[in-house]
Amino acid sequence: MMKRQCEFCTECRMETEYRLEPKVIHKVIKDKDYEFTITAAICSECGSEVDVRGLIDKNSKEVDHQYRVAEGIISIEDISLLLKLYNIGKTPLSIALGFGEVTVQRYLDGQIPSKEYSDIMTNALASPTFFKNKLRENKEKITPAAYKKAWEAADKLERAFTVSSKLLRVITYIFEKLDEVTPLSLQKLLYFTQGFFLALYGKALFEEDCEAWVHGPVYAPIYRLFKDFTYNPIDDVRFSILFASKEVLTEEEKKVLDVITQTFGIYGAKVLEYITHNEDPWKQARIGYTTDEYSHEILTKESIQSYYQEVSKKYNLKSVEDVKQYIQDVIG
Image 1 (tube, rainbow, N blue to C red):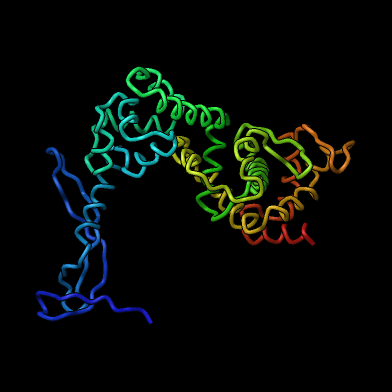
Image 2: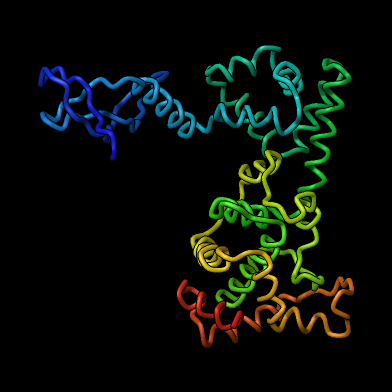
């Protein structure tokens, strides 16, 4: 049984139930007027606001978040992420970015950075190359051990993320929509996404080509990026950097990805592999190869587009129900 939310109402002069509702407030910060939406507790009896323990702190965080978004200021969470991404402490990070020694600590404690310093941290989060350049600039001010650890972490990230920003953004969207994604299932979801987009809009969603590997279509750079996870779900703080990608997906691209994640995304990797093994692009690219023979044969975008255009004559690729039916027909 759900516990009732009750608090003392100063208007009713008794303890009453309350509900949480959004409330718009205005604040002037540095001579500039802002409109923020905060959470208010409303008495269910008289409709007046009631004081609820912890709500003031929640409101402060809501205002802080909305102010940072409005001004393009980095969040405390993203500053913390910088420390993890680059395997570096607060003081050496401050020095590496050209700040004072305790600057990052102050920001983690809640002080809002200037736009200039915020942009430096945002760029470091989005680009390992940018961070390496800052690290190099301030090398003499950092201990050799801290420098070495941070450089190695940044170098590994930089070498890993060699794919297009569009493909990174597509992967990000898949991560956002699905609770668990293994390297093998991700490969197949990318392939289906590209195929559907080619068939529906006559152009590629991302530039990379996939190859006809033993276990189905594979984007080699993505394989190298996530191979350490083998058959396990991808879960590593390093890949949070994907979310910093400035590439924006269009509504058309999101709709295709929504269909893919709501249909193919509910199946395990081996089922997805089975589906690709029964589709013409992979089968044609594997002609002349034995079952377990390694191959770098490209599944051309033209062959993928042609196949899914044929599929679209029978199934509406924009319909979740139609795509589910297609999957069932292939699985048998």
